[in-house]
Length: 316
Image (tube, rainbow, N blue to C red; front, top):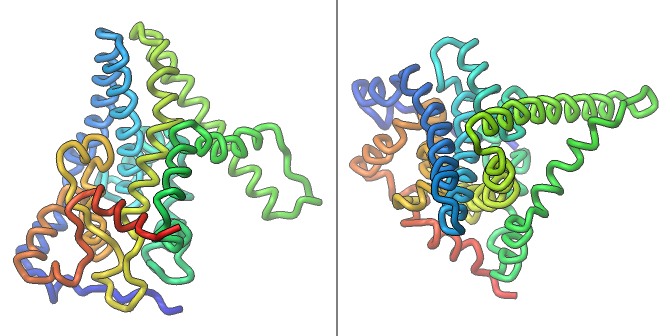
């Protein structure tokens, strides 16, 4: 299949509008990463100072959403959006965003740019995330239970952990050897950075909450909100030729932005149309597209509940 069509921004925005939309701030990029970690620290402080079931539940949900936020900021770094200086952008994106949640910036970038190139086409590496939809409510509930009980976490992380104890051989073939090596390196980085995090939790007098909030959130809430985000972005969208219809924008309310969709990730249609816009410019891009009457070509939903109703509309 050919690559998906691209929209020429000159045919949509005035030069002044496009200049404003594409303007980047390294300070703002760094601030977003600081904000993510400060929110995590605030949630842990809340449950440390007032430990009870309610504050614990809030902390797990907020931290899980900010772990997703770190992955989103890794995505921003993959597009060069955290800092003007490439070396600083790469370091922040890798060590402060990707590695703490078990990801890798370089491998993600290669994979993700293919997704942009072939969005919703057979060559799209993310097509498996959207192709099965709509599904039944029962099917979704089974998936959500696996997420919230840690089964998804174990399924995804266990092979990487086991790769620490494997060694590729010539008989394995180059591809298998490379896979084992990459998985081993990725998990080793993840464990080392998390050992540092555990030490910081201990120094702050919150060692218990490293396990009961940080790790538990990563094993439960993060897989669930990652699934919801994946569904919202492309499930039940068009596979046709119009690039305005390949992704979805979800108009998230403040609670959804706090617990499901941080850092403007809900403006996914705008991101696919103009993928090098900084994430903090996407709301303005949405507003301008609405003013120009182009929203009617886009898939826009009023909230995540509406998206999930659409995505789970198949009968048994």
